[in-house]
Image 1 (spheres, rainbow, N blue to C red):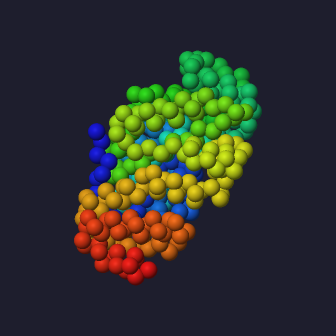
Image 2 (image 1 turned 60 degrees about the vertical axis):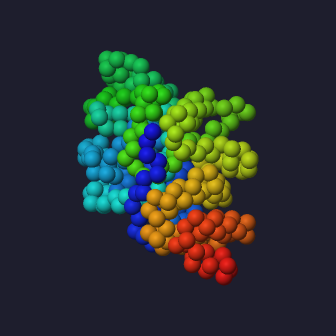
Image 3 (image 1 turned 120 degrees about the vertical axis):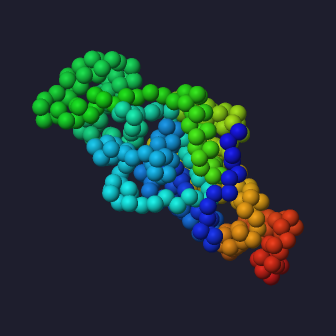
Length: 333
């Protein structure tokens, strides 16, 4: 079983959380910083990603294990290549990894980000019939079939460079074996990983088949591997899908983003922080724990502040080194 309780690294003063995924985890984490008492670490990040192979590629880039060819960079990242390459990724205490799509786009050994590919070739993809025919071809057709499609749909010498890239792209779908391999790699190489699925939204009252299949698969793999996973569907449905999700069924409303982060905290993040106290010792964790708990006590509602005090009280019973912190934040409150 992958090690889920590695002590990781910290600056000592504040807990560091690194997101690997899309805006569905980056935005809630950004909004949650004041009331979670954490910092977000996006050093050396390529930007958003969606599939498990992309997440592994992102991890390996963060760790300096791989590079992205300059010619392919615009299809992988929306950031400046030189600026990102010059950054250093300091190991975080916690990693939140979102796996939201079974679609895997590649060109050679490089995983591409679907939205960045569409942005670079916006004119090609704006025609829905052409777009759908292309996705089908690069998943199922031979090279000859792909070339024939592009010759007919995107011919002309002025488009030769675009055709040369598009003809090399391939689409496949991550199966359980691929997902298991990728989740193991992420959990083994990164400390304290919490996986997050896409929201299993309803369209016209029914699940979206491909999304439902992938969410279910990710959760089943996580359970079999003993990994932490959070499915936002229950939180979305508890509020009401229309109130939590935009009409595209992919993006959260602004007001729901901090609510979602609280669900993360209740489901896994608080337990991960408790694991860090046990792994590193209360003395080493005390500054970061004080920052975190002060934020919980001062920047949340009465119920959550009370829950934070109760949690610190229980920690202090187990770890005497935290009694002085308990006296200040709980007894002296």
